[in-house]
Length: 100
Image (cartoon, rainbow, N blue to C red; front, side, top):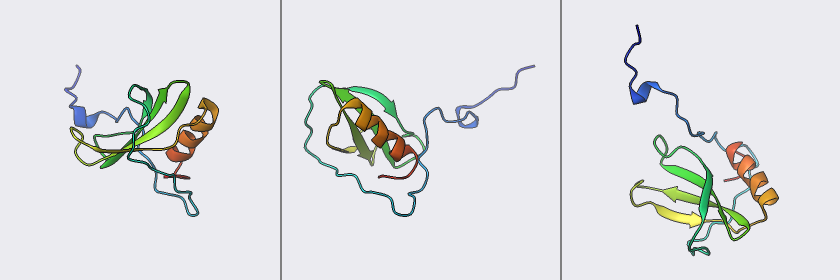
């Protein structure tokens, strides 16, 4: 017999960021949005966190977007854009608590 499982009982499919590590590096955040069109390629949890992040690709460059506040109308900032290899390194550092 299969028990009823609620959405709250399921593990979150998106990563939750760990606390910042000692000696972490701050990222530069800008409210000016450089790209009108972009594709979200990875993201962190927005259901259980007040601040969440997206890894975005546009025009051959990749950047990180940070959203805070109401998920329906968040305040958005983004980093500079890098080539994909550099951006993936920043994303891994973000997921490991080395940058924020």
